[in-house]
Structures are given as structure tokens and as C-alpha cells.
Length: 62
Image (tube, rainbow, N blue to C red; front, side, top):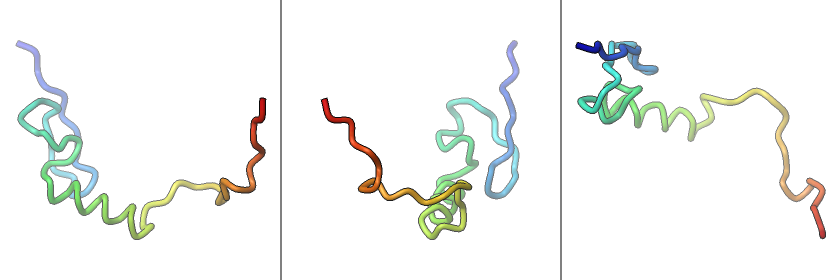
């Protein structure tokens, strides 16, 4: 019998089996998923790099 992969919930660090029993994987629950989404929305989580204004980028005109 194949064992499920166990991962840690990114929010609370509890173990989560990577299977259909955990529909919010890699999060353990909808609550942890929404907490993480809120952190991205209020910019507590950021991806390093310079801000880019899409209007300053060159356009490909054919």
C-alpha cells in the first residue's frame, strides 16, 4: 500500500497528508488557507525584487 506524502501546513505547521482528504492542501484547513491569503493581501508576504509599473514596460508592436 502506497503511503501519502506528509507536508507541513505553511501556516500552523501541522502535518497534512497530500491526498483528497485534505482539499485545502498544502494547508490543513480553510482557516489556515485564508490566513495565508490575508497575509499576501496586506503585503506581509512579498516576493523580493523591484516594483514594476506595467505602463513603463516596452510594448511589442508588430
